[in-house]
Image 1 (cartoon, rainbow, N blue to C red):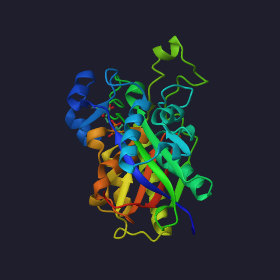
Image 2 (cartoon, rainbow, N blue to C red):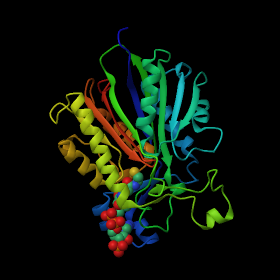
Image 3 (tube, helix red, strand yellow):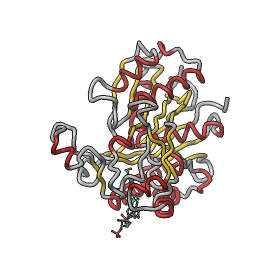
Image 4 (cartoon, protein in one colour):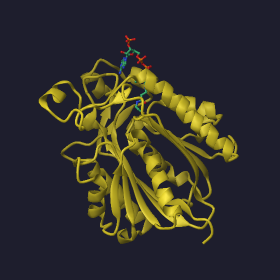
Length: 333
Ligand SMILES: CC(C)(COP(=O)(O)OP(=O)(O)OC[C@H]1O[C@@H](n2cnc3c(N)ncnc32)[C@H](O)[C@@H]1OP(=O)(O)O)[C@@H](O)C(=O)NCCC(=O)NCCS
């Protein structure tokens, strides 16, 4: 084998059955379908109800089950499981360990990765480095969140945005000129004040006080987050395009994190890419944090073909952000 690349050889996803519409949100807080559609672009989101299942591991298990079926994967061959999530089933053990056990990936070493909405591209970055090192050949990347459990349903600034969902991607080593080609990953750790959930960690462990102060839910300064999301995602995408000779013509797809339809449109416009090359499913799932990009790839899988030039880009709490350029690994099955 010549130069080793890490390539996605299968993608799957799972979203819970319960559909929470804008009409339902409008009965909880002072908002409307019209406001949410115009300012954010979300029509409905999925919510994991206790009657269906609990925890992000439940959704991951469903996604992995489907992926194993689609790829004829022997789960025992998977050597590592990386789970990008901000809502693990428990603080410990990690969610990846339990997901691996459930799916029979019993020879894998497993860990969670915390990078909020950038979790999927960060996990791809790690998996790619493991694979190109030559030490590992098959890695399962899981990415998703049950954001409904950390959403403040009395805050109209945040509650319409978030939903639940989880994706799964199998990465394998290949000698072909496909898979992950290049990436730019960035972090600015000086942004706690703009996007956070400050309760439940070691600074503010769970207490009556943290619950009373609503510190176990996401808080954000939406305008600041919006501005940083647009400029940081588009800057990394433009740099990635320039150094890989990608143009609006030869770039086939952009897969942006689904946080706000206006953010997505602004990033595509700064990249000079037409909207028909941008994967968007925010209207039906909302922002599922680490889950948005794999859920888009899962939705669009029938339209993807071997060698298609794709840029993934995300932005999230941290701030974390970045962009990954990959050549798709297989034709529609
Ligand atoms: C949150 C967000 C949708 C708000 O949109 P916006 O156009 O910036 O709205 P503003 O914050 O300027 O608020 C405008 C007005 O709408 C109101 N508003 C906020 N949410 C509302 C809602 N759901 N329904 C109706 N009105 C609402 C505000 O209270 C404000 O009213 P005011 O002017 O009387 O104070 C937008 O800032 C955003 O998407 N930010 C990034 C979010 C994000 O990506 N977060 C996840 C991390 S990746």
